[in-house]
Each structure stands twice: as structure tokens, then as C-alpha cells.
Amino acid sequence: MKTAAAPLRRPFWYYLGPAFLVSVGYMDPGNWATSLEAGSRYGYALLWIVTLSSAIAVLMQVLAAKLGIASGMDLAQAMRARYSPAVARFLFVTAFLAMMATDLAEFMGVALALNLLFGIPLTWAVVLTVFDVLLILWLERFGFRWVEMVILAFVATIGVAYVLELFFAHPNPTEAAWNAFVPNATVFEGATALFLAMGILGATVMPHNLYLHSAQVKTRTRGNPESKRRVYFWSVVDTVTALSAAWLVNGAILVMAAAVFHKNGLLVTEIDQAYLTLKPLLGQAAALTFAIALLASGISSSTTGTLAGQVVFEGFLNVRVRNVAALRLLVRLLTMAPALVAVWFSVRPVTLLVLSQVILSMQLPFSVVPLVSFTSNPELMGELVNPAPLRWLAWAAAGLIVALNLLLLTFAVLGV
Image 1 (cartoon, rainbow, N blue to C red):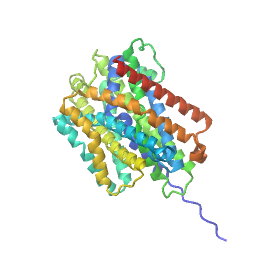
Image 2: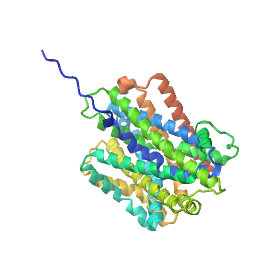
Image 3: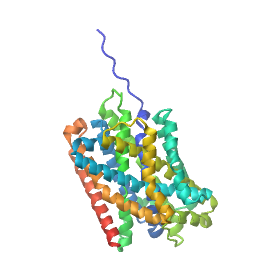
């Protein structure tokens, strides 16, 4: 009697990709502005906040991946299935507003990079960002794996660029390593340091990344006979690896700002200001490298934002759009509209970044709390339900994120 052959195990690299797709959201131009100001204003003192925020990001993205693997639903689909229609519609609106807020920073990053590299006016530079939709559609003809590989190439470009920036900047490695892991509370005497720290922590979990990751990880379970636990294990490896790269990039931005700007007594609060200041301090090569990394960051993060928009639309509205090209173009036009209007009215990029973070702060609880709740539900998650220690840690992290974002929102409203 013949026995059934055991299912063939897929190689580990098959599972890598979804987390790298979302990792660009953690090194988008919005994060650049915060890290540049933190480093130029306080040196290495807030570097441990970057480490803490990255650890929380890993936790939340692991939960997002777990939700997709265990339930077969992305976060948007789970919200529609588990909540009443009225609540689901409300969450859909908040998710879409969050994507528009996120895109404010990402579009401005692309526009600033094109302006700095090629002298293209900001208005036209923002319009040009619509073409990354065409890039996605063209690559998908060869399989979605190609989209992931291109995003991975962008991540690698950003990483290599910041290796070069650190080479140009000559930071103090001992001081940087110490401050990366040892909390430094001496700078929190005034409200500014606390505001910056909350800006770094408050922007840790980007709502659209949770939707995208929970959807994209399902491409590793579709038609895969292997156990959910094995898929989850490699998804954790994928997430830790990808977001560790994001941590290194964000840390490198702050370290560069500390070693170059803080050391020379210069306060940098604008991304284009950093580019223009690097020229006389470190030379044209350093400034050019900075702009190229900014362009890669903006294009890749706005691309994944468009993909996340598709997930949100299809998940909440329970539709499978046949004309994906039209949907993505519609998402792109809707989310880029605020950035385009702001540029037309000559709103300062830093103002847009602050506004985007405030809007994200308002929406973030509506993504994080349901995610932790869903992954702690044994009926929904089965064998992958959060064990008690992970559940406590997840609720503590969610509470910290919500509290800090509410405090950040309060500061913004009061003008502190």
C-alpha cells in the first residue's frame, strides 16, 4: 500500500518579501524629517527612541502577518467581517484619511528629491509621482514577486546611500552604539525633546503598513500545503530582517545629522535644508547621495501606499476590482490631491509633515487596537492566537502608542 508523499517544503527565501515591501514605510520622508531634526538638535541623545520605536514596529507587523496567515483575511477584511456595517464604514473612512496623510509626506519626499536633483518645480514633481502606478502594473505582468524585488532594490539603494553618508560624516561609533540602546532622559527638560521623541514613536506604526502586510503575506499561504506555523515562523524572520534594515537606516539618518549638523552647531528642520547644508560641509558627493536616497525612499513608500489603498478599498467594500489599473490610478489621484493643493498654495514641506503626523495620530488607534484584539481571539486565530505574554506585551505597546499619539495631538492642538 502506497503512502501519500509528504508535501514538499518550500525554501526559506520563498517566504521573504512581504515585510520588505512594508519596511519602506518606516524609512519614508516623514521619518527623515523627524530624525534629521532630532540628530541636529540633540546629537545622539534620542537614538534609543529610534531603537524602541523599531522594536514596537516589529511587534505590530508580526501581528499583522499573523492575522493574514491564521485567518486568511487581511486587516480590512477582518474589520468588515467582525464589526457592524456602520463601524466598518467609519473605519474605512479613517483608514483612507490615514493613507492621504501618509502620502503627504511621501509625495513631498519625491517632489523635493526631483527638485534637488533635476531642478523640477515642486508642482510638476508631485504630478510625476503618479507614474509609479504604471511601474507597478508593468512589473505585475511578470508576477508580483517582481514588484517585491524592485522595492527591495529601493531599500538596498537607501541602505547603501546611508553607508556612504556615514563614511562621509565620520560619526563617533562608541557614542552612537551607547545611545542606541541606553535611554538618555537628560534631554527631556524642555517640551521640544519630548515632542520629537513622541514624533519618532508616534509615527512608528503606519496604519497602511498593517493593512498591506496582512494582505501581502497571504501570497505565501495561497496553494501552500505547509503548516501555518511554518509560514508564520518564516514571516517573523522576514519581518525582523526587513525592519532591522529600516532601524539601521533611521538610526543612520539621526547619526549623520548628529555627526555633521549638531557637531557644527547647525539646526536642520527641513529636508531640502539638509541637502543644501551637506554640500559645503561634506561636498557634492554626500549631498547627491542624500538626494538619491530620498528619491528612492519617496518612490518606494508612495508605491506601497498605492498598493495598501487597493487592499483597503477591496477589503472594506468586499469587492474584487477587475480593472485594477483604474482603481490604483483613482487611489493615487485621491491621495495625492492634498499634497498637490498644498504645493500650489506654497505650504512649507515641514508644515505638511506635521499635519500628516497629527492626522495619523488620530487614526492610529483605529488600526492598532482591532489588530491586537483580533490576534488575541482564539476563535479567529486558532493555533496562532497570541499567547498570554505576547498578548500583554501587544496591549502594552498599543496603549503606549495610543497614549503618545493622543499626547502629540493635544500638543499640536494647544500649540505647545
